Amino acid sequence: MSTYFNATSPSTLRSVRDLVVYLELLANALFPENGIEYFSQLFAGTQRMGDEALPAPGSVRGPAVFTYQGSCEGRIIRIGALTRTDELLQFAWIKTFGKAEECWAIARAISEALESILCDEATPEIVDYFLRMPREATWRRETSLAERVEITHDESSFRVATVSGRVLDFRDFSKDGVNARFYVTPRVTDWCTVLTNMKADFAVVDRVTKSVI
Image (tube, rainbow, N blue to C red; front, top):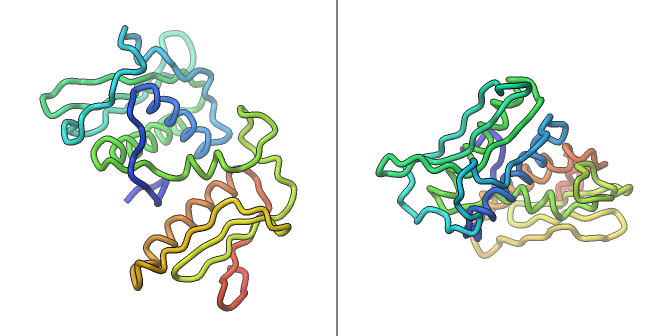
């Protein structure tokens, strides 16, 4: 169970470049006011190409993500993984002016995402929700959506839409029977995280009782 995300789907990330781009979006989605100055595209200073394939399923022992004081100013977050043959793979590094507590929180979130992606082959959906939200520019982390968003749900489905009817997400898991709620709840929770972090005006509404939760 992750501290920072709940819903996942089968991973479609195939290259180191895909992974690094995804992790940068994850950091911005979860920590919109972060002190990150630079998210490397050098893949940890090696000559390895960003299009290199990710480690094969089952070959990774676990993530290796840590932070330390930079040689000049700010802090560095290193992102990598340890293979089952004890080889340390280095994917990227981050230069940040955030406080140590924030850096360790980002490192932990990235570590949990790597565990899910590389070990379980499941990508957290929270980045997809972040990208679905309108923004004035791609670098902005607050939504430009002025109208209210409602997350309407019951035990088998949910819908995220503006009051004027613009649908941001809709999923129906009724085919999963009594297990449907295990698909609905994590997605509603992650949508709440994204909407809160992006400073959206939103409410969660029970579809059956029509009550605001």
